[in-house]
Image 1 (tube, rainbow, N blue to C red):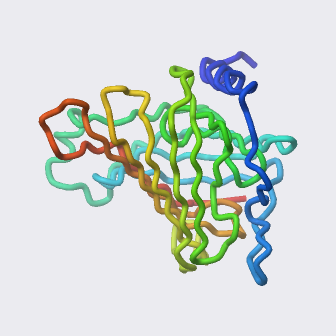
Image 2: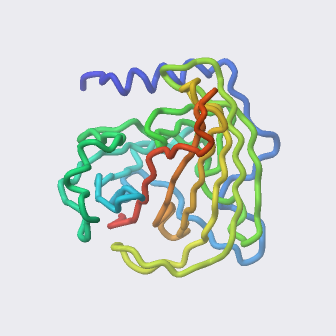
Image 3: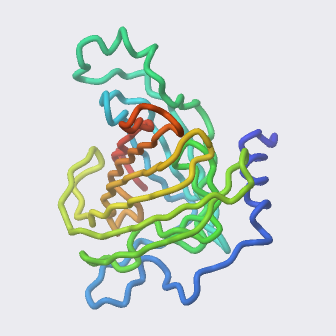
Amino acid sequence: MAVTRRFFLLSSAVLSVGCSMRRPEAVQPVGTAAAAGSPVVRPPAVGQSWRYTKRDIFTHTIVDDQIDRVAAVGSTIDIDSRSETSKQASADPKWGAAWLRKYIPRREVPEGPLPSEIQSPWGQVLVDPHWGQVQVYEVPIPLWPAQLTPGWKAHVNTKYKTPSNQDGLPWDQTMAAHGWETISVAAGNFRALRYTNIINFKSTDFSRENSQRKETLWFAPEVGRWVARESTGIYYIEDSSVDTPYDEPGFRWELIEWT
């Protein structure tokens, strides 16, 4: 198999932090909470997959179908992703959307293989392509609450690198679990723990300041992954006279099927 440019960038990013990588002290594996009656998260196995539909959170337009699949389970859990860019328009498009779409800045989704997600250990992300570029964290970040209990909260203060920036930029994330809910998506009805992430970080675009991202996720232990996920972000422009924030692209993923 030919080495793709994405694979090369991913490998470069991983190697760049290899010497400085450290683990948090006394970290409990995510999803193996000691709380009595806490649900057990489905363990990873090669071949497990999750297919999501991805919508623009502002226009509600379907922009992609994404398939995540466990490719390897060992010292790391490697999850390969593939984009099957959807040509389907929104079922209820807003007036003028078709005319304005070509002028609205958006993150294009290439069809075909996407960068891999790498967890180490299960439930903690080390290499994260979720934000549109590969991010490698100095300390792995929880993907879901370590204790699947409403009220659980954790704070992670670390750094991240990208293939285009090797400086180690600040990443400050607070995760909070709110409550169990029944959520209905195309894949079915699930009892899921709703939790949020608030992330303050330094962008690789140094014209941006006070960058913040917010997420809401619904995690179903039986699925071993979220069944719905919403991500948005804001930032300000340095030395700008505009005192209102700009929006990053925002998306919502919903589970279509899983195996």
